[in-house]
Amino acid sequence: MTQAKHAFLYGLFFSAITVFFWGMLPIALKVSGNFYDPITLTWFRFAIAGVILGLWQWRRGSLKEFKLLEKKHWGRLIVAGSFLIINYTTFVWSLNYLLPGSAQLSFQVAPLFLALGGIFFLGEKVHWKQWLCFLGIGIGMLTFFHPIFGESGQGSIWLGVLIVQVSAAAWSIYALLQKSLFKHLSPSNILLAIYAYAVIVMLPFSSPSKLSSASVEDIWILIFCSLNTLIAYGAFAQAMRYWQTVQVSAAVVLTPVTSFILTELCVYLNWWPNSIFSSHADSLSLLGMLLVVISAIYVQIMSAKKH
Picture 1: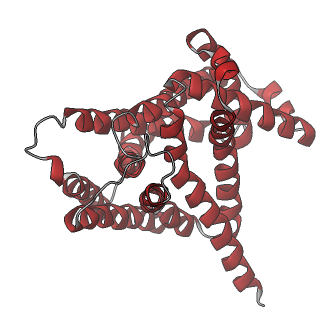
Picture 2 (picture 1 turned 90 degrees about the horizontal axis):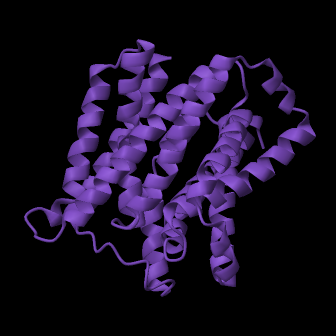
């Protein structure tokens, strides 16, 4: 087997793991919402991931990077951490109003927010074809949610969509701040610092004592949510070693589709029937989802061509 074929298969394997875990995450978060509030759930995720990542970085001898940081870098870390906290908590909150797949699809506006941030803060330029893609994402989302137009009592769904937009905007600001820190810290150390900051800041507003009254199933779901980010981001980093950025990005855009498939599978198997429901999407809604996915993929292709 040639080296190129090896690289393709490894890239495919790690990309598939990334998409699967990110696709499953909103389902697990929605189920967790039955026994943990968004802040407590996010606190647990940061705490468990922080401990594991901290031990890993310590064993590798990578913690010495922090000694070289200046005050302004610490300030950026705090601001980036604050926006990542908003991103995590608001996404969990949105699942009170949206199905997992709908939340993931709504989050595809993140590239638009990231592009706007690049324009205003980094002086980057956006090609007109990319603007067409962003328009396609907007039209696709409106098409996907078309069944609720004109129906009464659907305000909660629009509230969920709005909350996801806040989550996507917060993530985009975090990503821009993270990019400005790459010259001083590795991505793993940036996350480690943010996890530690979040655990301290969120502790007064969380309720860790709820763990004592949780069932075994609840605890396992919490552990899955906590490990999910580490596994998904680890697989994502590995995929980037074997595939070009545009290939990995295009694969990750399939996350909403994965969420829909996994949601329908959970419904079919009658798992968590009180939390997970079928989307009952019609053909026009599925066409809207396809338009969002294709537009998001093309944005990544255009971005790769620019570099």
